[in-house]
Image 1 (cartoon, rainbow, N blue to C red):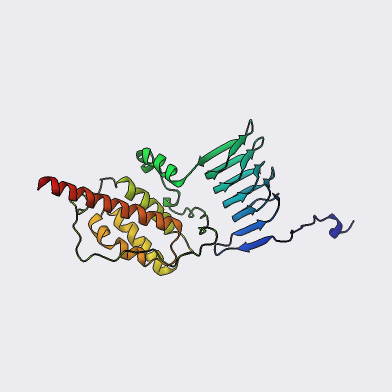
Image 2: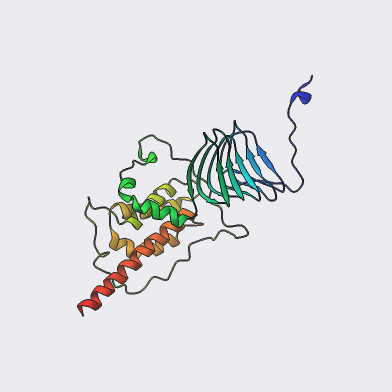
Length: 278
């Protein structure tokens, strides 16, 4: 028997799309059923009209998994989002899914599922309830000599081009600063929850090699302001700084929204206090 006869045959059905994104991650989109037998890191995995099966010896990491029918997991799956009619974890399967959009989930006797939030809002609401516990956790990339954690590639919604920059509001000529935000927090004073979560996201993005040198420096400046608790400077400069980040990812956008939400809430609180005193 020669090598050709003993080697497995790979069949790529008509209509299949295989691409590699800027992060070097493979994305596969196929019209029918998809079976994954080998371990690997993927950007997106999609079965337009069928099911996806991850076999027992495969350890798969993917930003998103989409299929019209069932996502079967026999091995291991780690994913930011899974969209399917149902998820079926078979015996001894391991799944770590942050967000899921399904009609049903079946979990085998010895299978293990971690995550399973229905939306990002639900995820952040839960984390905010345990903010004190999260603050005490050491960050993996804070250890000296430790490599940065692997990044899941950021992908825009289907059919939508990634924006070149954040929609930054024009800088106001004069800003009424509330007492809550017009000061520098003490060294040992904790950041408010919204700014703390923004700091977590920005620290991670500072390690993202997809950004250019200028964008990385801007992210590092934002991280510095938050770590130094300089809320006065942050309030007056964050719009301009975020506007200098080229092609911001989803985490940068979330950080921008959280910082903006915090300062808008602070200004509203300050205005209410001023009206009450008047």
